[in-house]
Figure 1 (spheres, helix red, strand yellow):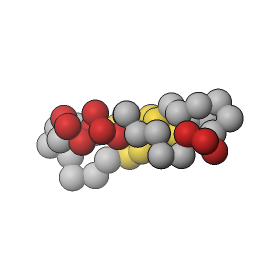
Figure 2 (cartoon, rainbow, N blue to C red):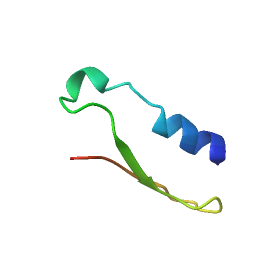
Figure 3 (cartoon, one colour):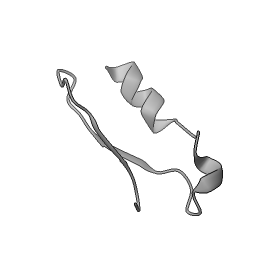
Figure 4 (cartoon, rainbow, N blue to C red):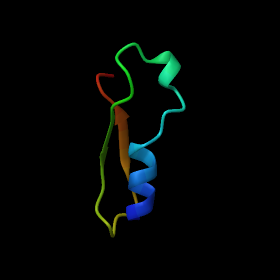
Length: 42
């Protein structure tokens, strides 16, 4: 889970389309089965 969270935070796939840059926001616990991910501001 820790590697997945690091990969999500380091993602830049949509960087060219984001005027304010990449700023992923996520909420998860290491035992979570669901991860909430968003882009701020979004």
